[in-house]
Image (cartoon, rainbow, N blue to C red; front, side, top):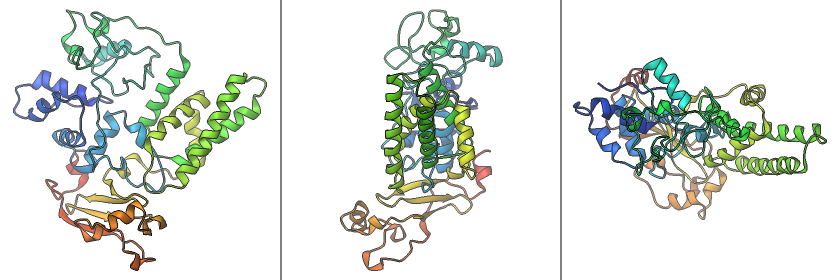
Length: 380
């Protein structure tokens, strides 16, 4: 019987815990295979989600949102993006890896007291250096032998097997003195814990107003360096706003990393940023509302497939066609000249210019998807 995946537990931690406890169980093939991987591909994340009982695109996105730090890239999105993780479900462009791990000794001690065991958290990675909860510097090397927590050092089962008889909880905690690192960690945790999506244009507008307010309200309190930093942030926010407004197909999710740093710089507390967002964005979309949809293609115009679990089919649609797609020299024009397998999924030929793109149904039954209600199938 599989162990239950813990809140915020990383993918690698879940794999290694199951192998440690259930190595000789009959349903460990997927876990044995994944333990050999330096990183997880899209297909391997799907296998892991399926092993848990979370099938299809819905299950894939649920696993990504709750158990990888990639969630920070998908919470902030354009209002015309109707998929949770864009093309991640349909392509192998991205790898998910947390072999290079770190941990907070205070978190481990709390877990031992509460549950009797601890595990590796998804927020402990190269981009986050501080525990958002305890303001403790994360340890990425063993405090007893000095080996890094990676495939070339300690494998992650050291969390449960100990190092030379010593548990990782015995390590002393080193308090963090870098406020910027703490605020970044809190911001990332806040985003990944958000129950609703954040519109990128609204977020950028809120941040611009905050930067302008700080510049105008505290001119005498700012050093020349601080004022220069705020001016630079303000200029970059305006550039990002223009970029997002002019692109309705493919959200550039990695730019959200810059938005995260802007939030951490401009706000004393993440809750204050959240409050400003709520005042401007009353109709935010629930996080799980986009889990069953993925971006199937498109350059200038994004087209999507929504998995219909009751019928066991995928439904193709293009809700926001761009005029640029009509040009033969465009990226979409290239693919229009090279028809795909399903006629319903092609962009219209120029002779049909002006006609609306309508919902189409992909004729292929989703493999391995039983025709039952999603809330039953996903184990919710």
